[in-house]
Amino acid sequence: MKNILLHIHDDDAQSDRVAVALDVARQTGGHLSCVQVTPVEAYAGDPYGGLFGMAALIDTIHDQQMALRLATEARLVGSGVAWDWRSQDGNVVETLIDQAMLADLVVLSQPVMGQRRGVRQPLAIVGDVVMYMRCPVLMVPQGAGRLDLAGPVVVAWNGSAEAAHALRLALPLLKRAEAVHLVEVSDDIPGLAAREAAQWLSRHGISADVHEWPAKGRRVSVALLHAAAELSASYIVMGAYGHSRLRETVLGGVTRELIASTNVPLLLAH
Image (cartoon, rainbow, N blue to C red; front, side, top):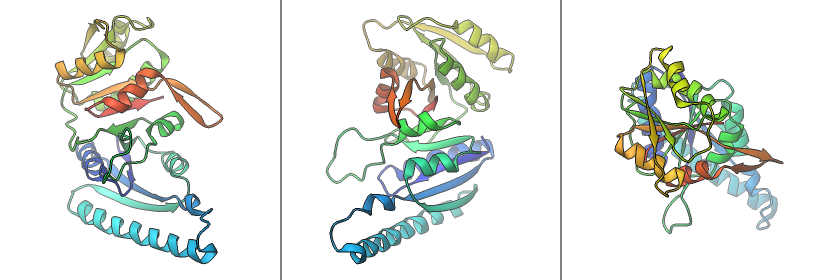
């Protein structure tokens, strides 16, 4: 992963997001592109103060964005990672998708479920970005401030085209893992056998273990998280299931639940 796009936003998950992006860049020899988007259209309809009030508000927001940039750049300078900075006004999701045309990986944060007093929440954009992105998205969960690419990896496998696509896109990272575990939840919809995915990986020099993980009455997402914990996974790879309709993103249940509840980084591809 030589071209890594990092979303910059003033929220309480920013520090962990930067740390994980730097970990990936260091371990892959990658370049970090920091993309900071000011969603000025969100203030275009401000009824207070008219045009003058709106202009003053946008100036204040730009000042806050500059303060965040200076603080983040100070951290990046001593990181040992090559980086650049891109600041734009516009829609956050659309801008990230445009900027990621040549990205190998996009790093975002896990959305926070519900409102929490005193918490500056990361934007809940993972689902929208994944559905329109051509490269994988690495979602950093709350409190996960590091990522060891050499650790074990769990690949959620159900034989679908999305799972196969995610496996292909994750290949550069999987080659660095000490162990790759293909995990099938036994009551999931059958498709291409996991042994065929393991054979494909073997042709790329990766020896993968195949696990048929019993659901035992649990939801698929819960069974996958239990598998990740038991196998000490550094991160989970999975295909993002769902479809888009008139710009409304509809994610499959397993994808939604893992986005909401995972406590290890999640590599998603649609």
